[in-house]
Length: 277
Image (tube, rainbow, N blue to C red; front, side, top):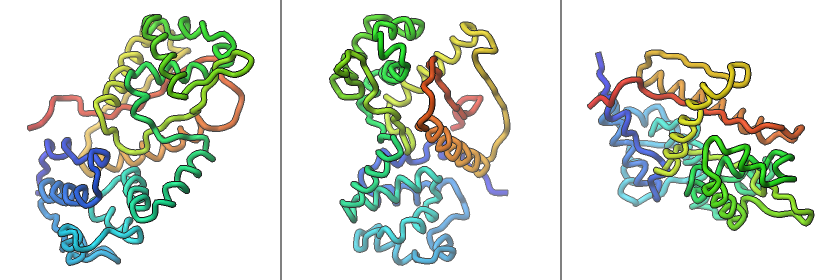
């Protein structure tokens, strides 16, 4: 029976940590070799249409480039998730055809979304302050932001965040004195690349924990499921979560009646025990 080193699974290469597709390809191949005893490039390439083991070798030696038409095949070779596939394909498109990046950004704007800016998470509170101004009542009376977010941060921190958001263009003042959101929906399509994003997720979990006692059950929804997973089933589940996340983003971006209350929704999947060395 094939065994899996769980410490390797936990240390799976993060695509956002790499500046070059070839370096990421090399890291993912090494990861699969270490985490899957039966994996080899030669064996995996037999199931691919446009990628041979010889081509992979040439790419790793930088004698050939990874072309956009082979993006999906290389994604299969590396065993990428659906989100990583999208990131990898866009990555190649940007490198091989700079104009493709403009098209990607244009399509993103049409969907009323903007690629997540890491600077927004200089302080995790920025996300909450920004989205609080989606509420009409707060737009009309910005001082209400202190009431809305007083349970999670001090007035001084909220004021600092508000100044940052106005300065960086996430929020803007209108002629009639309202403060409105300039960037309606900020999303991170690829895996979390930095300590700042981890800090944001930790804060969201802390707020969720606090709200279990702060709000009655009819004002919040909590659902927890504990289940055992193999590495393969784990990746299958994360792909399901990614698909659901896309639906959530479309739901959030939909042009509909303005809300009157700010909510946070988080999905967390993690081991229940300590790290397995």
